Image (cartoon, rainbow, N blue to C red; front, side):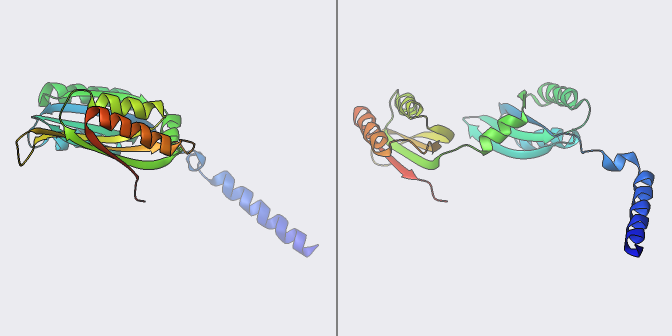
Length: 211
């Protein structure tokens, strides 16, 4: 009986403390929203700082990014997240300011949480494809169309055309990172890649990416 009374006293004290706790203590954190921002403009020092300043001023966090220089154009693709009221309006206003004051072309796209989750849970095995040969039309199209037919999902691709050190002939290189579904017939895929390589007179290598 004494033990039960002690328990009752503790429960009563706990109930009083809960009653005295501010309601804000129990409120959930605001849901984070995700956005993709792309920006491109003539290369110059400070482009990354300008876009990063927008992200910082709107209270957002840079989740992931990819940036590259193509000819004299610098391009950025950024995944960011944030929360709070009127976040979309603040980002839209900031992007317009970058276009007007910094001479950048900027787009931003809201992303659903489900889209982020699906990307992170992409099923399959990571593979890397490397191709090299004389530069000609159709290399990217024919290789990527074949990969699409086998449901391979390209997650990163770099291409480059450069003169051969010996002859000066244009050489084209392509480096692809992708996720290949677990049920893909790999030997069949390799055979088809070799066929495409023969048709284009290029060398194609496919190997599993290192962990």
